[in-house]
Amino acid sequence: MKSNNYQSFYRDSCALVIGINDYTHVGKLEIARADAESVAEVLTGELGFPADKVTLLLDEHATRARIMERFLAFDSLAEDDRLIVFFAGHGQTVSGQRGDIGYLVPVNGRLEDKSTLIRWGELTSNSEVIPAKHILFVMDACYSGLAIQRGSKAGGQRFVSDMLQRVSRQVITAGKADEPVSDGGGPTGKNSIFTGHLVEGLRGKAADENGVLTATGLMSYVYHKVATDPHSNQTPHYGHVFGDGDFILRTPDNGHLSSNKREDFLIEVLAERPEPLPETVLTEIKPVFAARNGYGDPEDKDFGRNDWSERLGVVKYKGGSQSEVVTATHWLALVAEPVSNQKIDFDLLSLAKSLRSQSKQSEKPFEDFRFPSQLLTTARSMILYEGDHSDDGSRTERWKKFVRIDPGGAIEYCEFTGAAGTYYAGRTNDNEGTPMKVFHYIQVIGLVWKFLFTVKRILREADYEAGVRIVVNLVKAKDSVLVGFSKTPGLENQFWRQPFDVEAAGGGSLQNWRCRDLHFQADFQCSLSTLGEAESKKLIAKCAHKLGLAYNHQSTPRCFNHGTEIFPWDQFNAHPD
Image (cartoon, rainbow, N blue to C red):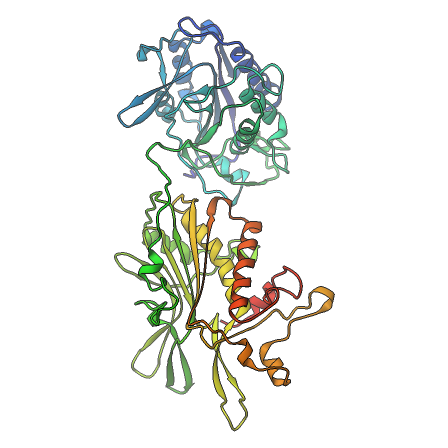
């Protein structure tokens, strides 16, 4: 929602601040008026809001007519203005045919007469006629039915100037309908728990390491402070009503308030916390994608075989127009499938175009996954693949690797040339040697690690961050040998000896290194919302250990530097595809 009309600064700053203690028809409050006065004070004293642009409606002045009149008068604002609406008072939730409906209670409101209340939708729908690019609603009241939607995906960064050139309507509420919102007890000593933490956040505690304070950063700070406050029984909710910009509250040089060119800052895009919709029930379901596509029983001779994996292989050129089509005899197959019935609905073609065009995503090597560029679609799948054609007139095709995604969120990734290969034992100039299947340890584990974060990135496109099952498979592993251990010296400058080096030196038989299982399979579950570097490393260590045991490695995983948990990404990246 970026517009060329928006500037990378604010021209003017306005606020409507409402606090009601002395209600006419409902119970009186003690702290709401003080909350409003504290917010107005920090806006004008510290955040660059001119005093004459902050409208303060307290007690008897906060009637329904006056609140709506003052709010709708902001339709005179300009595009590059910002507006904060703060309300401290009673909230009311009413059940409707399509879910809860939230209301604010003005000073003269009567709960039994909905026409005297302010429906939340009146504010959000009328905010569309206010030209200001950024509006932030802050509600120290408990009610539901806010229809908060997720804005930008978390996990990335944007420049402040970028956020300032995108429209946004954002909201934070102190608690939902079934939670009591504290009227007092806040950290400042004179405010509610919610507004007390809000004011401290506005004064700088919620700013990032660069001193930049955004609405999302403020809301995240307040959420965690209120949710963990020992005196609190409430959980705030926050997010975008619409748009993908972010209200900027503070920058170190106040560059957001001036057209003069100032320093720009990168800010983190944080996850939002919308109140869950009543109909979104995240019950666990039994995953079926892996079983339906050949990954159900590792003792089955046809394990791992389906219409797509049958295409794996490579074309080897012998010179001139001569070529040899080699069909994969063993390969790595990774499967991910959601284990929650949260609705997932991809536009597969748009997703494919997005993934094909993505360049390097992160400086962290396990977050950098490069998708194949060739595209094939069916009614139920999107496949990105890297294919080889023979050049002998037959145009026979084989795939080195592919990624398949179905609309329900299941993902299959198969790789032949990067993860598997053939070693010719005893090869000499006169003897081709005995072919032996091998899997490259570092490549397998590195690909699993990258796959984890690729799954997280793909499913976030559908706002899915719940549980996922990951299945790691080595198809046709029997009698293969695991090679490609870490070559980097580790603890006490020791390093792993490679299997074929040991055999060549007469130090052992490769028979001890062969896999005895027909196929190898390891599976685990994780939550995408908590999947980070530390959590992924634990999962990867477990997978590496289980894989090592399948090949009779009675030691710590040899894909890490000797005696350490350091993964040799340089060696992974140097491996030819």
